[in-house]
Length: 332
Image 1: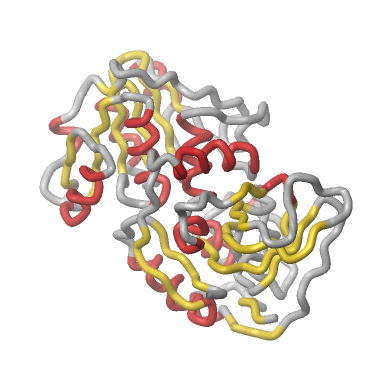
Image 2: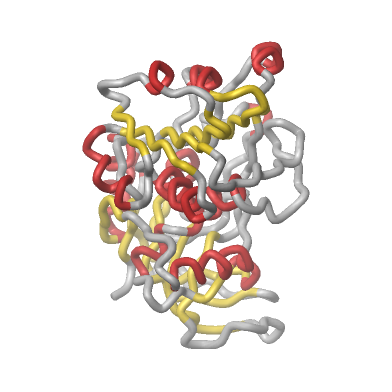
């Protein structure tokens, strides 16, 4: 089969489209013919040698590596101990995360059945492949963590804040993968949603249910917003702490990417900072799949690239300002 591999850390140019053996399945696994694979930040973090992670948290990388966690496809074979899936089933999932052994940038993948859900009939493979990591991140932050594993970043178990019609949620980076799902899930729970993104995304986000839109290129959200119950910041970085000022006392900050906060400042403001590391969860995807099936969630697709052009997909990601998800097309 064909797959993307790389033999050294580097830029998008290190990704190679190569011939590799079709994987064998073990207990608890199914073989999936991949129709599409989602592109996510951990994919390019891995390609770059995981430099984004603190040195003490970095695993040793053994090359060659095939990136990718998210995929949608059709079951080709099933291990004898697997129940709930059969040859011919259309499935989607995020494989073996946290970890870097998903290997979904390929024509076939051996997938843990526990990481899979049946693909909603109304969702094509491209959109289904774009959903898992981003929607599970938003779901585990906002709706249900689904486990009791402490966050490796805070050492504490995250507890989602109950969302009601009296809750105001600000989503920074609202047009991206996690952001556009966070907007929709908060609206599904009835919350008032303020979306922060560049102006070209306003129509997209209002169509997804955003009650208020702030174009960060012309207006600082911190100048015009206050009294928010919950901030989900999908951008993170050193500037993330500026959003502490928009929270009311007792509010909660949810940074999706690496960001540091001064414990004394958060204590003085009376706010909580909580963090998760998203984890594979087939049953949660099945529950989310019902929302997709009912039309309660949509997947925004920024762009698609053939599997052979994975390097171009990563180059697109590096340019930023993504609306929804980037997806690799693998099989028709």
